[in-house]
Length: 252
Image (cartoon, rainbow, N blue to C red; front, top):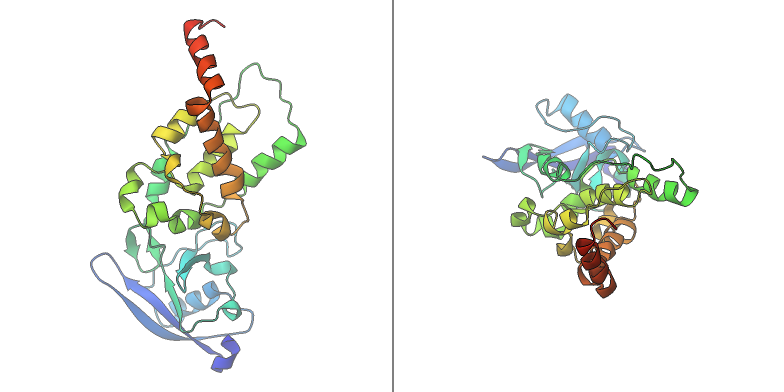
């Protein structure tokens, strides 16, 4: 427990940028109940004034303070110091993305991939009727705070950086699922998900689901249903036959 350190805790912070980076160890004052972000901000105020760190709401709602704490991506504002077992506490930026400075990574890749997904496109003549089960399904996906922890821990991105030019990642699959499963949306994003976001590269390890700080069941409720829909248009013989009929009779 951190209280065993006589009201001080050891913190190893990654300092530097792409040209040079190193771990620097600090002794930080600790008060019972503090979260990791409290300690980092206290260090920034007293010992490391030039420390670069993202944070905003300090309530687990904005996703800004995501970092790797003792090797695992977490929200610093939601991780209690007393819950950690390994000391000194090692804090790094999200390692799947280029380093900007200290604890700040360049996460623009995630927005670039998101721009490929067509926005919500309702049918002009569709009656605005929603059932509770449809509302609940959409609401789960809208809980995403874009911390990009799921993107950081996804091994398809982390271990294979060459995939960044063609793989959307868990966050963007959730984004697509939110609209694909909306009963009033008329846009078909399945071909895009297969060809441009390469959803087939996901092999369902569920590391994204386990790491999601807001509890979205990314794998079970977003990725697997999307994969099933894509399989329907590519491998289901009845669907294949129906598509052939529609092409021969475009007015049907």
